[in-house]
Image (cartoon, rainbow, N blue to C red; front, top):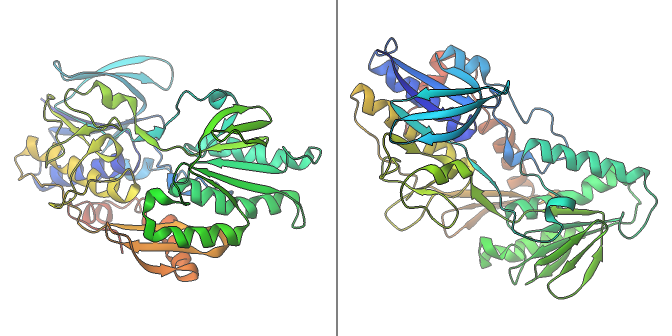
Length: 402
């Protein structure tokens, strides 16, 4: 009887979980009795780190041929429920139907989504770059500004959130607005951050670089504040300041996909399942958690994987390998990812590249910008649809960071 590994999600973690599971199955020569199935709306990998950009062509490459060549079946749909006791899932298929599917091992790789607190007007008037559809909607909106009468609201873009997404969106925005409104157009870009200095959540050592890049781009900064209310043509801050704007972009952090909440066991404040060293959900029945749905230690020093494609690439490989290894009798591989880097795009100023959890600056400006382009457009893209090539880099200890 064929045993099935079901992987929910075809993002960074889900794709590499499927490749790594297929590799382990092939190593054990068990292709005839172990099946790998990926469930996601479409067989595509959305390159979320690029969604702050204006040009969205090529940011959702198809992985259909890649999955086929390694023998992975794709089911278009979304996992709606998990029955841990019976080892079954219910899938809402893309054609509107329902399927109940049994699994031997289940890998939750459904990623994360934008945190949306109960701020008045957030759901009605805010834009974001969280998903491809919302990033495309923002681009359509920005282009529509050119046909509107010039006003304070039309000419002002507000970004709420000073983490990496907010910084990248804010420093890129003047470039986008000049392309739409004209090089000599008058506009404002305002970044709202709850930290006391711009980008403070990323470490005080980096804030001078962020301040310089924001000033270079002409971005105004409101530190130590939050957005209290959002209206159609204005936002009000916790200080009482009212800023007229037709464009509020929300970048207020991430939370694990709600599917993770159905998995038994302890969860952290971001909704992630606290996994063991092999990325198993300790209180669940045959379930592995990976990518943005797992809280996993990267080393013995207390560091924990971030919600980032950098960690998802390795987390996916480890979870996929171990899910298959438990079935085919191969040794399990503990997750470890001691090297940590960040590379943040900062518009025309350049970029900032750091190494280590203490974020030691290694490259800035043009040098870091060149590296960021390689990361965004080459390194994190799926491999060619060639069986041997894909399998050769799917081992659970493969490292992709510089």
